Amino acid sequence: MATREVGGVVLGRAAEKLFSLSGLFAVYKPKGPTSAGVLNLLKEKLLAEAGLQTNRSKRNQVLKIGHGGTLDSAAEGVLVIGIGKGTKMLGTMLAGSKKYTAIGLLGKATDTLDATGKVTEEKPYDQITKGDLENVLQKFTGDIMQVPPLYSALKKDGERLSTLMKRGEAVEAKPARPVRVYSLSLQQFQPPLFTLELSTCATMQELTRTKHGPFTLEEHALHEDKWTIDEIARSLEFCTSLLPGESSHKKLKTEHPGETAVSCEDK
Image (cartoon, rainbow, N blue to C red; front, side, top):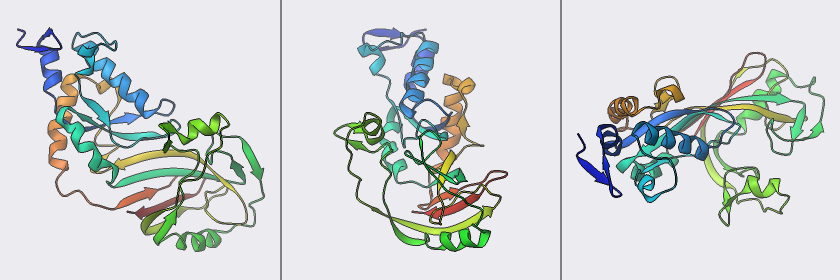
């Protein structure tokens, strides 16, 4: 029985339950789409299940939903979603802990610093040893200043720097930002390898966010086949207990068979 009205439309049971959802949960973002694209698809699926049209009418805009922390289109992993009053909690996720798995490839550099760009330089890497890499990693512990890459989701005049760069527009580097790295360790060393500052070059091949705040990829991120009103309701109930006592550090981990894996924690 319909018991609620939104945007001049009387809601059925599914729609009423959808608009009653409130809190934070996590979904899995695959490689390819942008974070905004994943959010739009999620919203469309929920509105369709609720029997509401998925156009841009005022009725559809009543559903409050957003994400906290952009993942590049080439990256995958945990994307935290806020729905209802949970959208007001997304700001805290931006400063929350994050954990990544990154795969690096030595010997090639690209203009985007990852596998999606054009190769700009190639160098030999046979001379690089495990000890060389471990010594370099030590320089990136403690309080450091980190310069954001030009190909990033940071914005200038409302547009992403990566979008401006791809259009060939001149983009100035953003100022370096303070980062605290608690630990940095080499997990594997099997060339070609991922590195930071050696007499060669490297490119990041893959990036997966495996943790954001208390939400982990394995335990909490809902894949697309679970993007239903009932599944999200269960996830919201379960994830409520995760939010108190959230730690304030950030962790980065890199690991892949046959290539270097590096892990670090920063704030």
